[in-house]
Amino acid sequence: MLKGVVKTIKDTGYAIVTSENADYFCRAYLVRSNNLSEGDQIEFEFQENNKPGEKPSITNLRIISKAPRKENVYDYALIIDKLSAEQYDKFCNLMRRYVKSDDFRKITTSKLRNIYNLVKKVTDKKGCKMIRPKIAYLKGREPDTKKFMEDLDNLISKIDSKEEVKSFKEFFEALICYAKEIE
Image 1 (tube, helix red, strand yellow):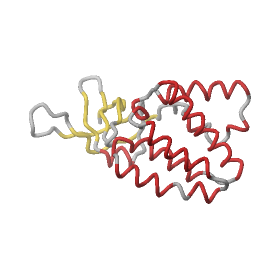
Image 2 (image 1 turned 30 degrees about the horizontal axis):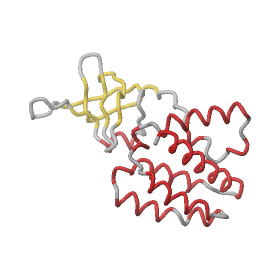
Image 3 (image 1 turned 45 degrees about the vertical axis):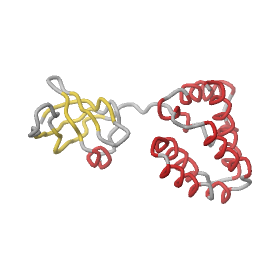
Image 4 (image 1 turned 45 degrees about the horizontal axis):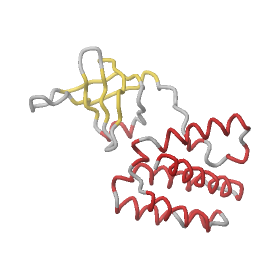
């Protein structure tokens, strides 16, 4: 078995694994079933592809070590009211970086405002959950927004209390503010 590192995971789910001698293609089902992340170290078997110029494909893999998880703006989304001043600064810095990322830049201001109008009306946990089908619709209608809509849907699915509803609304307000800053 060869050893390598997951170099990148593409939006479509497949990954590129780099080893000391070459890059290898890893199919999306292997990425999902092994819960791979960028930076993970793996051992793998592969097969050469028949078409010239294509990377060899990984057929079997085993994780040697997981990469340290990167902090994410969504980690703070449901606990905003519990953050210290220093943690809130960190949240703001992460939010600023997030709205400048490629995943977010595909979201139009009008789409963001439409979602925000729904979020502003929410008063309880059920109200938040009722936004999820609308997000699914938007994700299906505009595939470029898929990553953002999935992250938002995943966040809403975790909401479990009135305090988390309040934090979610504050999170979305911060999102709108920083999106306006880079507009």
